Length: 171
Image (cartoon, rainbow, N blue to C red):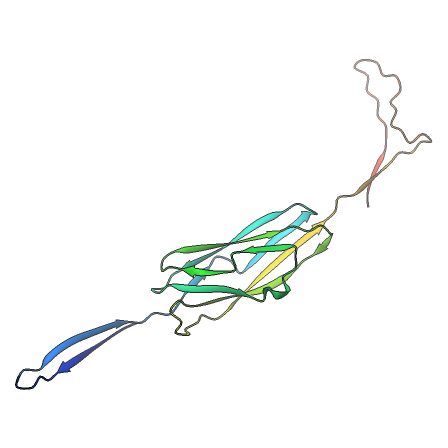
């Protein structure tokens, strides 16, 4: 929003008033967020995956941002950075890494707060960012249906095919 006004100065012994044109441009902090939820999907335990949250300042003022609600962040998530300043027209990337050593689902939600960098107290509505991840174990049992519990094809001639049935059971 642009505001215009005029300052009129009356100087003693000068019959002509001096006019000074004033123009002011008002702007609120506004940051576009690429997505408001990140789904890490299903991952094998102890295998990390990193996803990124992109913030873009589309306002005419520098914006300060910070994450709130991280006090209860599960240790399976690592978020960096957790605050910063984005100059007008620039972008900032938040890196979020998930890695778990146990099998479970890990939903989590935190807030992204944006305000002007000059401390005037002008803020955007906080945005909720949702995280979802699931870690699972791959554990199988080999079931061999014979007394020795060994896969033994015995004697096999060249170009001869032999099969041996067994079962892989997911635990």
